[in-house]
Length: 182
Length: 209
Ligand SMILES: [Zn+2]
Image 1 (tube, chains in turn purple, orange):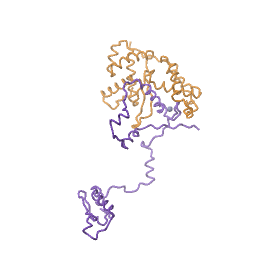
Image 2 (spheres, helix red, strand yellow):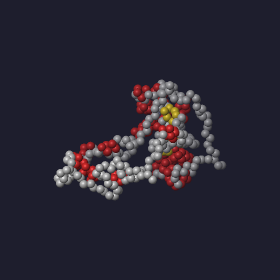
Image 3 (cartoon, rainbow over the protein chains, first blue to last red):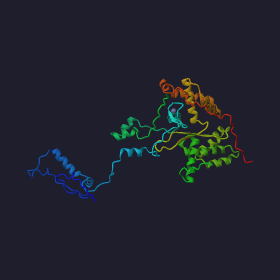
Image 4 (cartoon, protein in one colour):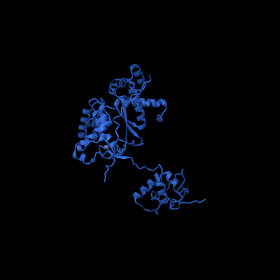
């Protein structure tokens, strides 16, 4: 059994073992400067930062540092050769090449054979949507901007809400390339 | 032998699903689902439209009512508008068109549509192709001509409707000079002439007597 202890972290002044449940509070040397004349004079900013760090130091951090436990790691480096062999072997994990490709007769872009071009289909579906706009009786009411200001004064959109309104989380179909025949 | 598609459900659940799908199909005339569901919906829809050709209308209505929802809207449409529309056809009332796989789970998608309906994707797509060819001054190839003939044949006022749609497509998609620049300069059909089965007559299925 080999045991390794990381000695690098055991800096002067912190050289006692830390255990998970025990929260160690170190007396701040800068606070009691009035009683001891030998104390080092540091800037108030540094003092404040040290105070803050000592108060808010998480317990978990102290558990994973300097506790003498080793965590699982790969035994050897995976060589470039081995990595490429694993990634390039013929398995189902790889994306297959598409050989059944055609061109869309209405826009000329590449598409799968025996399949409609999604770009053109969506454009036609949008036309249908336009046509049936007047048919449905349900009309979504939008609040007047002046009313909105009166009803919700001081309502401020956060950055997160603004990002959400862009609807970038919706998956969008990328268009295939136009095929250039040489 | 047909393929048994369980659609990952028990019998009752599957039946309810297909009932929903076929009701939506009769309502909207064109729906988009996964390919497996599309084929099953097509089967049921064709059966239901064939039912309307029975002599005993009351019996047919009672049989059909157990296969669709929204009886108040679906049944009058099925035994009125659709029955009349498919009077001259003996089968093939629906069409399934394959689409690109769905975003997210990569499932095969398809469109199910009622033939000669107001939202027949093949009709609109063919109109778009013809619009492009006419706008570019290219000759309309054999396959497109054949498709147009088939689409227009049984549709009332089909030819007029088609020419109107072609004009609309020119307005919508090929109006500006830039939209024409990116288009290919040929009619994009393979050099091999397709064998078209124009001469085949559909023979109705023989009855039991
Ligand atoms: Zn296209």
